[in-house]
Amino acid sequence: MTNYLHEGDLPADVTFQGDIAVDSEAMGLIHLRDRLCVIQLSDGQGDAHLVRFEAGVYNAPNLTALLTDPARVKMFHFARFDVAIIKKYMGITVNPIYCTKIASKLARTYTDRHGFKDLCKEILGRDISKQQQSSDWGADTLSQEQIDYAASDVLYLHQLRERLNMMLEREGRMDLALRTMACIPVRAELDVLGWENMDIFAHA
Image (cartoon, rainbow, N blue to C red; front, top):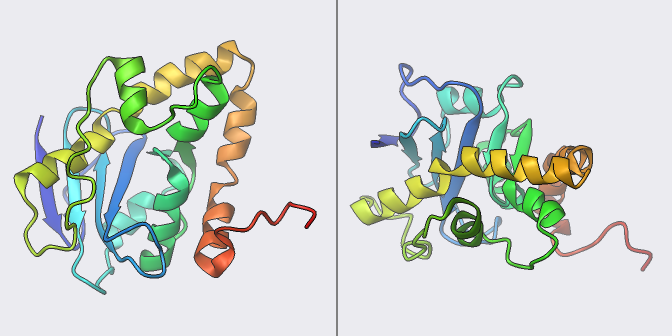
């Protein structure tokens, strides 16, 4: 298992097999304020590739082609945030999408613990450290601890999807989950345009 760090874009000779696990790191959680710093990817074969961006420089044609490839599902945990910040800074719509957080909320109704760390612990028996989550992702040089943390966020999404899909099928909610995930790009665009904290379906 190897974690690779690239600057600005994926190299043209980096290839992935099948669906892709994706995550992002930013300076914070507010799209209009906090810039996108890193996107990490894995095809579930054990390696992770991280792309680090300089501030304001998001012209990444190889990464763009991968994230918008209609033949590949892009797997996230809490896709709403990642898809929105990628839309804001790279100007692209990621699709199609699978979100393990949505899958968990529809399948694991016996708990309110749907965080990535909780899922990995219960479903896969893996204890994932979140220590580097709030570190400085805009730094010119990422530490090995940051690189390893970012990689861990994508290395297990394929396994989580498989297990969550089994639960969704068992509970008769697979179709509902997929239709809900198909709405994420629209929800993310609303977030970017300023409707992040408003339920537009509400009566009031």
